[in-house]
Image (tube, rainbow over all chains, first blue to last red; front, side, top):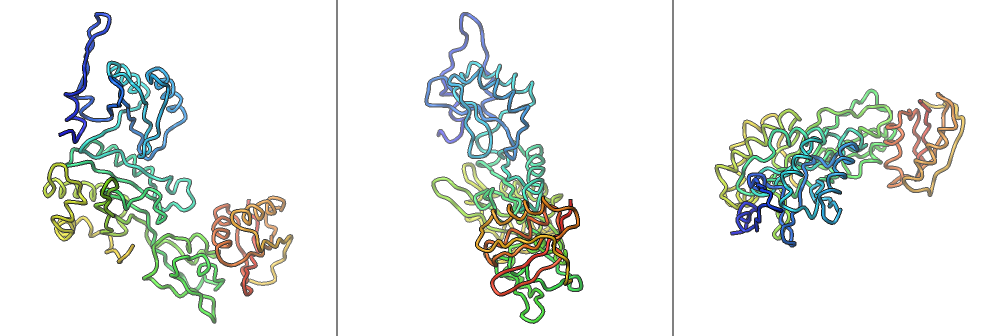
Length: 319
Length: 79
């Protein structure tokens, strides 16, 4: 079955040599993915590994030169998961293009049933809404987990805030930034700005004093009140990640389910590691974790994750 | 927190995001550090990002008054 690229490789036409010169194709390169067969005979797309979609201008210049040399049409495509793809590359040149990419510190990405390159929004480094260092987290996860074999593809993403630009609801495992607001009464002047900027109806202004009446049930932990408060009476009690699991897009999309809230940065690797462990033990080949969860039951996963999730908080409905 | 001396003022009612912030920023640029700009803004959507952006830029909101359907903010220029 042509489910994964490794199933296809034995069907790829390999005509070794050219002008009497012996050339070797390392099909292990193909099996780790990142080389995607095109319609055109002998031509492949080479997908680069760009965690979080962030790339230095120096790298971009060097990649452009390599793409210009190897892409028979001189084109690059931006993949749906934020990576650069060099199109129209002849498979006979895989070794040379990989060598040249390695020299500039770039690696080829992955396809198939394994942990993919994480995606991420700008995060707290420069995006005003960002609550978490999504770019740093994407780098970390990529280093630690990239290519780990699983039953089917395993996609992760990091959104820095509840706007969720990185679409954690569509990920096998998604992490969305959250901040828990705490209010300090003495420093509050009752200016009502927080009630005005909260678009979730989680803050009313007291008609007498103007001071906030917090409706915790409505809060989605975006931190707008903290950012807007002129006297810093709203502060961050804690910042972390809301963890969503079992989402996917594709022909039959599934929405990920929020399982735990306020997981600190340093516990994210544990969450990923244990989740993969549960998936390996409970899933079957060719089954996304969302399907496994629905088949085996969320309770099984929740029970398995109990220790790991202890550092976080339970999630509210509809978050 | 009242009777703060105002050095300049601008009425941005009817001006939408992000132009209300841009106009605020331009006025602030013309002021010296420590001087105060009074800005009048509609409540609602047009208002929601302005206080956050002012804080992000390092300025201080030193007085807030709510009057019916608008806010009057006094902003102290910092840096």
